[in-house]
Image 1 (cartoon, helix red, strand yellow):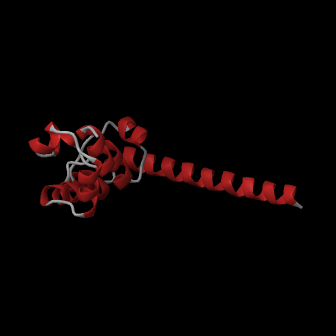
Image 2 (cartoon, helix red, strand yellow):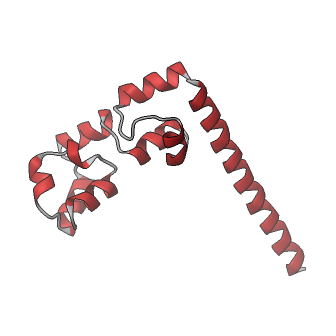
Image 3 (cartoon, rainbow, N blue to C red):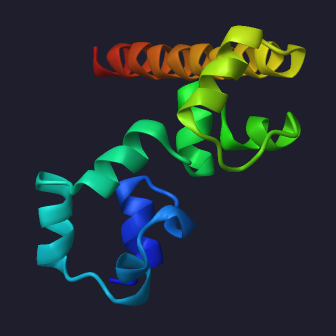
Length: 122
């Protein structure tokens, strides 16, 4: 697979990886080995970043869209993410509330579907 695909599946930012990873294709065997026994550079990237947008959003408890609405950077280090969580800027509080409402609504829909299916099954 291409390095960009492998980086995405590993949850890391491609430009932060070593040149040897960026330049060549990653075989399925190599990919599975990276997952099972991550080298130090991969462990360090996962630990301290910089992290890609999806990982940043997940660590902040918001959606990727919320990250964009908040005007935050697409990639952040773990320290930057922790600082944001401690500072709790207004946009982050709002986006976390929005994400919680979306999760609650999804749970309500799931419950309603299950109740409807149970009624139809009787």
